[in-house]
Length: 268
Image (cartoon, rainbow, N blue to C red; front, side, top):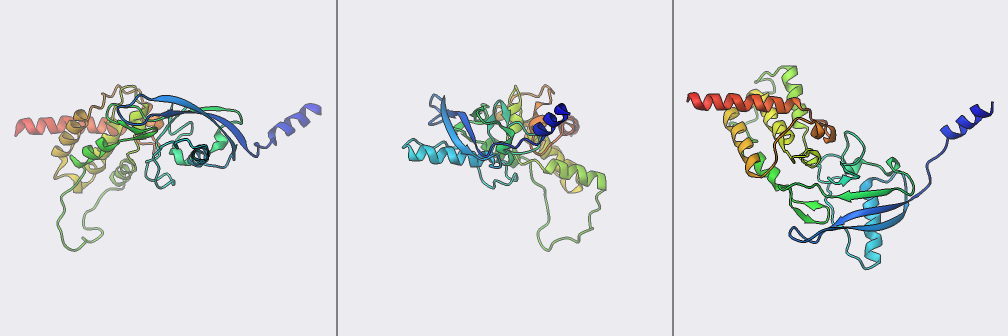
């Protein structure tokens, strides 16, 4: 009887009203400066706060103390834009699967925890300041082939180009990539293959993407290599870290697209 009572008490135990945490945050004044971890204590953290709200509390404390606030990237705070990438306790976007940092809630941590917060580290993602990084390499990859040729004028009829349900679903899955860079941050080689393959797959699966099909994959892969990203060794860390759960199947598809493009260009 007492064992049952003990179990009931444990299962109904409530989370603390607020938490005190130790934060080890990477501070770096610029891309060419030496960086270091600085340790801060924050209290009054409510479990229902998002991780970025917790960072706001830290910055408010630093400002009051006359210390320069921590620079970090954020925008929509709704899990849409991917701007908020941080590496939290060694994981891109933190311990949850399928969410961005702004959707990570403090109830995933315990009162008294130490949390290590650092930027995504990659040669192609130079640090701007503290946790803020420059992801313009992704923009250049997209610009090298992430477009289609369309006729200007009135919008076409809705069903003028028929697309199978399977192709449409796969294309939409690939288009879900938000370019946050979690795949690069989690890869031991800092590879951008998952990002690039999602952009290639999106259009390769659709009839609208066929005119640039060959040039697209050749251009995007070439730009990816120019930017200094590493090679893929199929460990799957990128898929595990991706907040939109983009799959490795896209990398396989891009490899097939690349092989096809090489054969086509050699024949011509």
